[in-house]
Image (cartoon, rainbow, N blue to C red; front, side, top):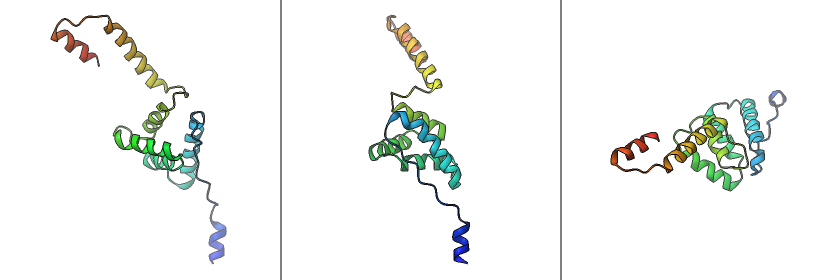
Length: 128
């Protein structure tokens, strides 16, 4: 009976490993999702844990720190976006790029304006 159980089990897939190179990150995220599905671990937290487990030691520490200190990053897509930002050689996520460009243009407009009153300062700060 024990032999029958062994034969019926699907072989375990190897845990995905991240090389530490930013250019490999998007493919690594895809491998993590595929591995998670194969293991029956497709929830956001499970995918984040699989991702962190397969990272090199320094990346693992950074990603754990990011996940622990950014409460907004409790979803897989948010975690991926935050990790991706740590690798400047990867093209930024479009949503983040749009926000950054908007922020940059606002800064350029306001850096030439003098703040002559508390009210002007308040208006300036409300933009952000």
